[in-house]
Image 1: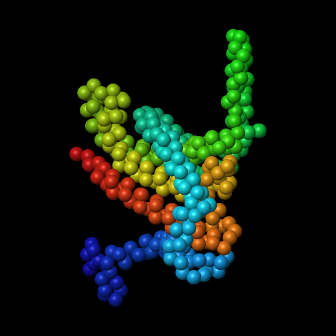
Image 2: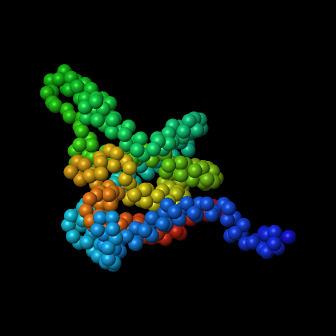
Image 3: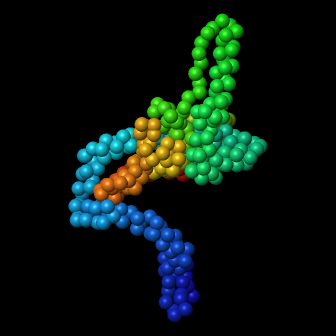
Amino acid sequence: MANSQTVTSRRGRKLSPFWRYAPFWLPAFVLYSIFIVYPLATAVGYSLFAWDGLQRGAFVGLDNFVTLLTEDPWRRNLWRAFRHNIAFFAGTMLVQNTLALFFAVVLHSLKRGRQFWQNLFFMPHLLSTVLVGILWDLILNPLFGPLNQALRMLENGISNILGVVGINASIKLAYPWLGLPETALATIVVVNAWAWLSFPMMIFLANLGSIPKGYLEAATLDGANNWQVFRHIQLPLLRPAITIVSVLTFIGNFNAFELIFVMAGSGGSPGGSTDVLGTFFYRTAFGTGSERIAIGSALAVLMFSFIALTSFIALRIFRSEKVVYD
Protein backbone atom coordinates (compact mmCIF):
# COMPACT_ATOMS: atom_id res chain seq x y z
CA MET A 1 0.00 0.00 0.00
CA ALA A 2 1.27 3.42 -0.90
CA ASN A 3 1.96 5.90 1.87
CA SER A 4 1.41 9.67 1.78
CA GLN A 5 4.71 10.26 -0.04
CA THR A 6 4.71 7.56 -2.74
CA VAL A 7 2.27 5.59 -4.85
CA THR A 8 2.77 2.08 -6.21
CA SER A 9 2.62 1.56 -9.97
CA ARG A 10 1.12 -1.49 -11.68
CA ARG A 11 4.56 -3.14 -11.80
CA GLY A 12 5.05 -2.71 -8.06
CA ARG A 13 7.47 0.22 -8.28
CA LYS A 14 6.82 3.19 -6.04
CA LEU A 15 6.30 6.55 -7.72
CA SER A 16 7.38 9.77 -6.06
CA PRO A 17 4.97 12.70 -5.82
CA PHE A 18 6.98 14.37 -8.62
CA TRP A 19 5.85 11.74 -11.15
CA ARG A 20 2.49 11.13 -9.54
CA TYR A 21 1.45 14.70 -10.35
CA ALA A 22 3.12 14.71 -13.78
CA PRO A 23 -0.22 14.77 -15.67
CA PHE A 24 -0.96 18.11 -13.98
CA TRP A 25 2.36 19.96 -14.34
CA LEU A 26 3.71 18.39 -17.52
CA PRO A 27 1.32 20.13 -20.01
CA ALA A 28 2.05 23.53 -18.46
CA PHE A 29 5.79 22.76 -18.47
CA VAL A 30 5.69 21.80 -22.16
CA LEU A 31 3.79 24.96 -23.14
CA TYR A 32 6.09 27.14 -21.03
CA SER A 33 9.16 25.54 -22.61
CA ILE A 34 7.84 26.00 -26.16
CA PHE A 35 6.65 29.60 -25.83
CA ILE A 36 9.06 31.01 -23.20
CA VAL A 37 12.22 28.96 -22.73
CA TYR A 38 12.83 28.08 -26.38
CA PRO A 39 12.36 31.66 -27.74
CA LEU A 40 14.60 33.01 -24.98
CA ALA A 41 17.32 30.46 -25.69
CA THR A 42 16.99 31.20 -29.40
CA ALA A 43 17.35 34.93 -28.79
CA VAL A 44 20.50 34.33 -26.75
CA GLY A 45 21.93 32.27 -29.58
CA TYR A 46 21.00 34.80 -32.25
CA SER A 47 22.59 37.63 -30.28
CA LEU A 48 26.00 35.95 -30.37
CA PHE A 49 26.26 35.75 -34.16
CA ALA A 50 26.48 38.14 -37.07
CA TRP A 51 23.57 38.10 -39.50
CA ASP A 52 23.34 38.83 -43.20
CA GLY A 53 19.63 39.32 -43.71
CA LEU A 54 18.09 36.01 -42.64
CA GLN A 55 21.33 34.07 -42.91
CA ARG A 56 23.43 33.53 -39.80
CA GLY A 57 27.08 34.49 -40.10
CA ALA A 58 30.13 34.07 -37.95
CA PHE A 59 30.23 33.91 -34.18
CA VAL A 60 30.90 37.41 -32.80
CA GLY A 61 30.44 36.92 -29.06
CA LEU A 62 29.31 40.09 -27.31
CA ASP A 63 29.89 42.43 -30.27
CA ASN A 64 26.17 42.92 -30.84
CA PHE A 65 25.73 44.02 -27.22
CA VAL A 66 28.65 46.43 -27.54
CA THR A 67 27.12 47.87 -30.71
CA LEU A 68 23.74 48.30 -29.05
CA LEU A 69 25.18 50.05 -26.00
CA THR A 70 27.85 52.23 -27.60
CA GLU A 71 27.03 53.04 -31.23
CA ASP A 72 24.41 55.45 -32.56
CA PRO A 73 21.56 55.34 -33.40
CA TRP A 74 21.19 52.20 -31.28
CA ARG A 75 22.62 53.71 -28.11
CA ARG A 76 20.61 56.93 -28.40
CA ASN A 77 17.32 55.14 -29.06
CA LEU A 78 17.97 52.57 -26.34
CA TRP A 79 18.50 55.11 -23.56
CA ARG A 80 15.59 57.25 -24.76
CA ALA A 81 13.28 54.23 -24.69
CA PHE A 82 14.64 53.21 -21.27
CA ARG A 83 13.95 56.68 -19.82
CA HIS A 84 10.41 56.59 -21.20
CA ASN A 85 9.92 53.13 -19.68
CA ILE A 86 10.97 54.43 -16.28
CA ALA A 87 8.52 57.32 -16.61
CA PHE A 88 5.81 54.93 -17.79
CA PHE A 89 6.35 52.66 -14.79
CA ALA A 90 6.56 55.51 -12.28
CA GLY A 91 3.41 57.16 -13.63
CA THR A 92 1.49 53.89 -13.59
CA MET A 93 2.62 53.14 -10.05
CA LEU A 94 1.50 56.57 -8.89
CA VAL A 95 -1.87 56.64 -10.67
CA GLN A 96 -2.91 53.01 -10.90
CA ASN A 97 -1.78 51.58 -7.59
CA THR A 98 -2.64 54.64 -5.50
CA LEU A 99 -6.19 54.68 -6.87
CA ALA A 100 -6.39 50.89 -6.55
CA LEU A 101 -5.51 51.08 -2.85
CA PHE A 102 -7.97 53.95 -2.30
CA PHE A 103 -10.86 52.14 -4.00
CA ALA A 104 -10.01 48.89 -2.20
CA VAL A 105 -10.26 50.61 1.18
CA VAL A 106 -13.54 52.29 0.17
CA LEU A 107 -15.07 49.05 -1.12
CA HIS A 108 -13.90 47.16 1.96
CA SER A 109 -15.82 49.60 4.15
CA LEU A 110 -19.07 49.20 2.21
CA LYS A 111 -21.87 47.27 3.84
CA ARG A 112 -23.97 46.97 0.67
CA GLY A 113 -23.26 46.88 -3.02
CA ARG A 114 -19.65 45.74 -2.74
CA GLN A 115 -20.07 42.96 -5.31
CA PHE A 116 -21.70 45.34 -7.81
CA TRP A 117 -18.84 47.84 -7.59
CA GLN A 118 -16.22 45.09 -7.78
CA ASN A 119 -17.77 43.83 -11.02
CA LEU A 120 -18.00 47.37 -12.38
CA PHE A 121 -14.34 48.11 -11.65
CA PHE A 122 -13.26 44.77 -13.10
CA MET A 123 -14.99 45.24 -16.47
CA PRO A 124 -12.12 47.16 -18.18
CA HIS A 125 -9.75 44.36 -17.20
CA LEU A 126 -11.80 41.94 -19.32
CA LEU A 127 -11.10 43.91 -22.50
CA SER A 128 -8.06 43.09 -24.61
CA THR A 129 -5.25 45.62 -24.57
CA VAL A 130 -5.62 46.20 -28.31
CA LEU A 131 -9.32 46.94 -27.94
CA VAL A 132 -8.62 49.34 -25.06
CA GLY A 133 -6.11 51.19 -27.24
CA ILE A 134 -8.55 51.47 -30.15
CA LEU A 135 -11.41 52.68 -27.94
CA TRP A 136 -9.32 55.33 -26.22
CA ASP A 137 -7.79 56.40 -29.52
CA LEU A 138 -11.32 57.20 -30.68
CA ILE A 139 -12.26 58.87 -27.39
CA LEU A 140 -9.16 61.09 -27.52
CA ASN A 141 -9.50 61.99 -31.20
CA PRO A 142 -8.88 65.78 -31.42
CA LEU A 143 -11.61 66.34 -34.03
CA PHE A 144 -14.59 64.15 -33.11
CA GLY A 145 -13.56 62.48 -29.87
CA PRO A 146 -16.16 62.83 -27.08
CA LEU A 147 -13.54 63.93 -24.54
CA ASN A 148 -12.46 67.02 -26.48
CA GLN A 149 -16.03 67.80 -27.47
CA ALA A 150 -16.99 67.83 -23.79
CA LEU A 151 -13.95 69.97 -22.98
CA ARG A 152 -14.87 72.48 -25.71
CA MET A 153 -18.36 72.77 -24.28
CA LEU A 154 -16.79 73.38 -20.88
CA GLU A 155 -14.50 76.02 -22.41
CA ASN A 156 -17.49 77.85 -23.86
CA GLY A 157 -19.39 77.64 -20.59
CA ILE A 158 -16.50 79.06 -18.56
CA SER A 159 -15.90 81.81 -21.13
CA ASN A 160 -19.58 82.82 -21.05
CA ILE A 161 -19.59 82.96 -17.25
CA LEU A 162 -16.43 85.07 -17.23
CA GLY A 163 -17.93 87.32 -19.90
CA VAL A 164 -20.98 87.98 -17.74
CA VAL A 165 -18.79 89.32 -14.94
CA GLY A 166 -16.76 91.40 -17.40
CA ILE A 167 -13.68 89.21 -17.71
CA ASN A 168 -12.42 88.51 -21.21
CA ALA A 169 -10.25 85.42 -21.03
CA SER A 170 -9.52 82.57 -23.42
CA ILE A 171 -9.80 79.19 -21.76
CA LYS A 172 -8.07 76.25 -23.45
CA LEU A 173 -8.95 72.77 -22.20
CA ALA A 174 -9.18 70.65 -25.36
CA TYR A 175 -5.86 69.41 -26.72
CA PRO A 176 -4.64 66.77 -29.15
CA TRP A 177 -3.60 64.63 -26.22
CA LEU A 178 -1.81 62.01 -28.31
CA GLY A 179 -0.39 64.55 -30.74
CA LEU A 180 1.77 66.59 -28.36
CA PRO A 181 5.11 65.31 -27.05
CA GLU A 182 4.36 66.94 -23.69
CA THR A 183 1.09 65.02 -23.13
CA ALA A 184 1.27 61.82 -25.20
CA LEU A 185 3.12 59.58 -22.75
CA ALA A 186 1.17 60.86 -19.73
CA THR A 187 -2.09 60.22 -21.60
CA ILE A 188 -1.13 56.61 -22.33
CA VAL A 189 -0.14 56.18 -18.67
CA VAL A 190 -3.65 57.23 -17.61
CA VAL A 191 -5.24 54.86 -20.13
CA ASN A 192 -2.97 52.02 -18.97
CA ALA A 193 -3.86 52.72 -15.34
CA TRP A 194 -7.59 52.73 -16.21
CA ALA A 195 -7.31 49.37 -17.96
CA TRP A 196 -5.35 47.59 -15.20
CA LEU A 197 -6.60 49.32 -12.05
CA SER A 198 -8.93 46.49 -11.05
CA PHE A 199 -6.18 43.86 -10.75
CA PRO A 200 -4.20 45.51 -7.90
CA MET A 201 -7.48 46.67 -6.39
CA MET A 202 -8.66 43.06 -6.07
CA ILE A 203 -5.35 42.03 -4.49
CA PHE A 204 -5.56 44.85 -1.95
CA LEU A 205 -9.22 44.08 -1.29
CA ALA A 206 -8.49 40.41 -0.64
CA ASN A 207 -5.67 41.29 1.76
CA LEU A 208 -7.83 43.80 3.60
CA GLY A 209 -10.42 41.07 4.08
CA SER A 210 -7.78 38.76 5.58
CA ILE A 211 -6.83 41.21 8.36
CA PRO A 212 -8.40 40.00 11.63
CA LYS A 213 -11.30 42.21 12.63
CA GLY A 214 -10.10 42.14 16.21
CA TYR A 215 -7.19 44.41 15.29
CA LEU A 216 -9.51 47.00 13.83
CA GLU A 217 -12.04 46.76 16.66
CA ALA A 218 -9.33 47.14 19.29
CA ALA A 219 -7.99 50.25 17.58
CA THR A 220 -11.47 51.73 17.31
CA LEU A 221 -12.13 51.11 21.00
CA ASP A 222 -8.86 52.89 21.79
CA GLY A 223 -10.18 55.98 20.00
CA ALA A 224 -8.48 55.67 16.60
CA ASN A 225 -10.28 57.27 13.66
CA ASN A 226 -10.53 55.77 10.16
CA TRP A 227 -7.33 57.40 8.93
CA GLN A 228 -5.36 56.25 11.98
CA VAL A 229 -6.68 52.70 11.58
CA PHE A 230 -5.58 52.69 7.95
CA ARG A 231 -2.22 54.36 8.58
CA HIS A 232 -1.08 52.32 11.56
CA ILE A 233 -2.83 48.95 11.09
CA GLN A 234 -4.08 48.26 7.59
CA LEU A 235 -1.23 49.83 5.60
CA PRO A 236 1.61 48.02 7.44
CA LEU A 237 -0.23 44.71 7.04
CA LEU A 238 -0.66 45.41 3.30
CA ARG A 239 3.09 45.68 2.68
CA PRO A 240 3.46 42.14 1.24
CA ALA A 241 0.59 42.83 -1.16
CA ILE A 242 2.06 46.20 -2.11
CA THR A 243 5.39 44.49 -2.81
CA ILE A 244 3.83 41.89 -5.11
CA VAL A 245 1.74 44.51 -6.91
CA SER A 246 4.79 46.74 -7.38
CA VAL A 247 6.87 43.91 -8.84
CA LEU A 248 4.08 42.81 -11.17
CA THR A 249 3.53 46.41 -12.26
CA PHE A 250 7.25 46.74 -12.95
CA ILE A 251 7.33 43.57 -15.06
CA GLY A 252 4.20 44.50 -16.98
CA ASN A 253 5.27 48.07 -17.68
CA PHE A 254 8.77 47.20 -18.85
CA ASN A 255 7.19 44.67 -21.22
CA ALA A 256 4.60 47.19 -22.43
CA PHE A 257 4.00 47.12 -26.16
CA GLU A 258 0.42 46.56 -27.36
CA LEU A 259 -1.20 49.65 -25.88
CA ILE A 260 1.57 52.01 -27.00
CA PHE A 261 1.75 50.38 -30.43
CA VAL A 262 -2.01 50.84 -30.98
CA MET A 263 -2.20 54.39 -29.64
CA ALA A 264 1.13 55.82 -30.83
CA GLY A 265 2.53 53.44 -33.43
CA SER A 266 5.81 51.54 -33.54
CA GLY A 267 7.79 54.77 -33.86
CA GLY A 268 6.59 56.08 -30.51
CA SER A 269 5.04 59.19 -32.03
CA PRO A 270 4.92 62.11 -31.73
CA GLY A 271 8.64 62.60 -32.19
CA GLY A 272 9.59 59.46 -30.27
CA SER A 273 8.06 60.80 -27.04
CA THR A 274 6.22 57.52 -26.36
CA ASP A 275 8.95 55.16 -27.53
CA VAL A 276 9.63 52.44 -24.95
CA LEU A 277 11.78 49.31 -24.97
CA GLY A 278 8.97 47.21 -26.44
CA THR A 279 8.42 49.44 -29.47
CA PHE A 280 12.16 49.94 -29.92
CA PHE A 281 12.62 46.17 -29.96
CA TYR A 282 9.79 45.78 -32.50
CA ARG A 283 11.34 48.31 -34.87
CA THR A 284 14.77 46.81 -34.44
CA ALA A 285 13.89 43.13 -34.79
CA PHE A 286 11.39 43.52 -37.64
CA GLY A 287 12.95 46.44 -39.49
CA THR A 288 15.27 46.35 -42.47
CA GLY A 289 19.01 45.90 -42.45
CA SER A 290 21.46 43.03 -42.24
CA GLU A 291 22.15 43.35 -38.50
CA ARG A 292 18.58 43.81 -37.30
CA ILE A 293 18.11 40.25 -36.05
CA ALA A 294 21.37 40.31 -34.11
CA ILE A 295 20.78 43.72 -32.50
CA GLY A 296 17.13 42.91 -31.78
CA SER A 297 18.10 39.63 -30.11
CA ALA A 298 20.71 41.43 -28.02
CA LEU A 299 18.08 43.95 -26.94
CA ALA A 300 15.67 41.13 -26.00
CA VAL A 301 18.34 39.48 -23.86
CA LEU A 302 19.14 42.78 -22.12
CA MET A 303 15.45 43.45 -21.46
CA PHE A 304 14.91 40.00 -19.98
CA SER A 305 18.07 40.19 -17.86
CA PHE A 306 17.21 43.63 -16.49
CA ILE A 307 13.59 42.73 -15.65
CA ALA A 308 14.51 39.38 -14.11
CA LEU A 309 17.40 40.75 -12.05
CA THR A 310 15.49 43.79 -10.80
CA SER A 311 12.46 41.69 -9.86
CA PHE A 312 14.66 39.15 -8.06
CA ILE A 313 16.42 41.87 -6.06
CA ALA A 314 13.12 43.54 -5.15
CA LEU A 315 11.62 40.28 -3.94
CA ARG A 316 14.75 39.48 -1.94
CA ILE A 317 14.72 42.89 -0.28
CA PHE A 318 11.06 42.59 0.69
CA ARG A 319 11.21 38.88 1.44
CA SER A 320 10.90 39.56 5.16
CA GLU A 321 7.60 41.40 4.63
CA LYS A 322 5.55 38.41 5.68
CA VAL A 323 2.59 38.98 7.94
CA VAL A 324 1.90 36.48 10.68
CA TYR A 325 -1.31 36.99 12.62
CA ASP A 326 -1.22 36.02 16.25
